[in-house]
Length: 340
View 1 (cartoon, helix red, strand yellow):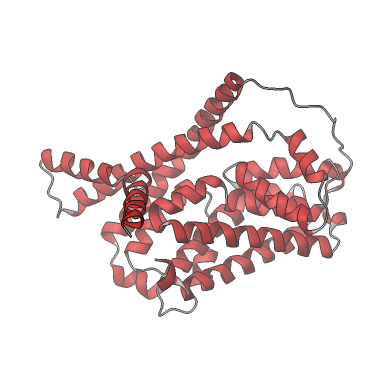
View 2 (cartoon, rainbow, N blue to C red):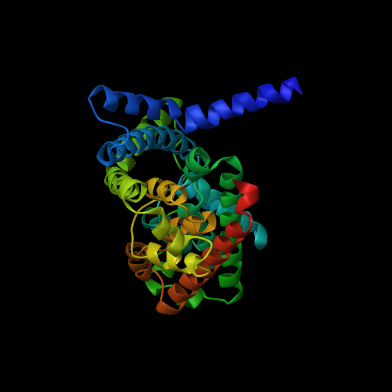
């Protein structure tokens, strides 16, 4: 019993003080109080939310991108293509979905890799499993969700995201949609070159460059997301959020999914919005549906994907993702009591 208490204490410290950085929240609050801002003041509360989340997400972002990019250095496109080429059927879809967890953080950066895999001759269904999982369930989302919602929610979110990716790829494969890929991609071919062996120093340099490059692209969306989260957290009445996205509205999941489509961000930009919505009474599944829609079905991503596939395949991809996201939303809403 004592051992279990120690394990729980260590885990709580990891989740709340390392991932959640609750010490940082206290430090920001103390700093604002020292400057004469009352904790009861809405503007001060908004500033506290904004500063705490921006600093926390920036630290996690840089650390996660560095680590994941270091791992990704072992999986360049040439090696990834060879790995996927060894598998067939459902196994190939599973490996492709898993491979998507160590690749880019938003769908716009995943699409070029999808095009490269498709032009290399890999089955369309397999490459679509990668395309679905890459923005939706990267390793960064696991730790970030854990810092906000806890380990159970994070693990189940990643698991169901991978299931959507695998099933989506299988459906596309069974419907024989190869002809719905633009001809210039199918005819492009690739030069089969071995990736150069990198030293540990090379990998560190690569990870650092990826971290800085991704940070510069993502940081504006973090500021926007945290700003929206601060407004929701401190200025929008909880009754309004609960009425639209709470349990009393059976269409909350659908509305959240549709609301996420016009936006463009990644998991780092949507986390503060999700945190604020949960605090105000929105249901867990509704929030996760919004996050999935933003990261997977954003309009800029769909416009870019349209350059690679024909309308019929694009519509099928959107339909599969939308239905899957809505199902996941209702699933999490139904079991919210067991997960939080």
